[in-house]
Length: 239
Image (cartoon, rainbow, N blue to C red; front, top):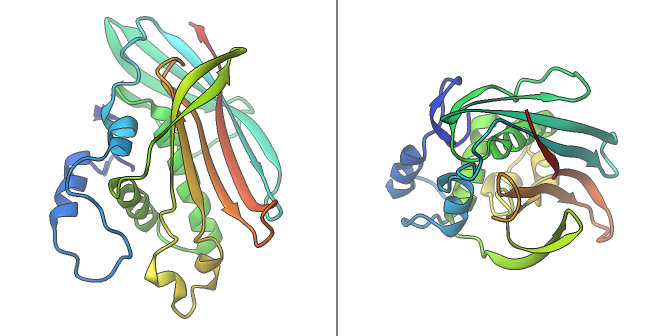
């Protein structure tokens, strides 16, 4: 799966943050087009090292809107319900689509610290990239992880949540834009989608600290996009 969001999982083959840091220190054997920093970046800290759930002291249900649009996309909208179980500590998380559709990416997590919605969104996105390009999920995971390790600029912004303007942080990555493989023979599909941009918006003033995540594949026409996947926090409630 993706970078760890806790010390204990119900998953196998979890790529740990420690493994990532070690891999960054290994001399590259070929040109990846990416240049990760040796030190932990602010983006990595914001997404995977901060405890987004530390303020939550009771069991909660988080509801996130997930929608897809764009000229190449089949328009779709659903809600991801994330159930956080608190028993002296945050003990477990499970999630489901409100529509009842089954998925392979909404797996339970034990003892979460980082908000699991990050993992859920990125794993969903990676499965879509596999469908679009025929590429391997582990390759896309590595590109995203390394893009975060390159140190994207983190900006201070204002967002509207619950009818109030609040402070937030935002940063974007383009994991595939500099990949030399996008220009090789037989990879025309990959090249078509290589300008994909991921944008993360976080705020300590929203429950779980993750307000939105967007993955946008632009088209040649600036005003349009080929595919846009958006995730937005809608509400939280007690269980």
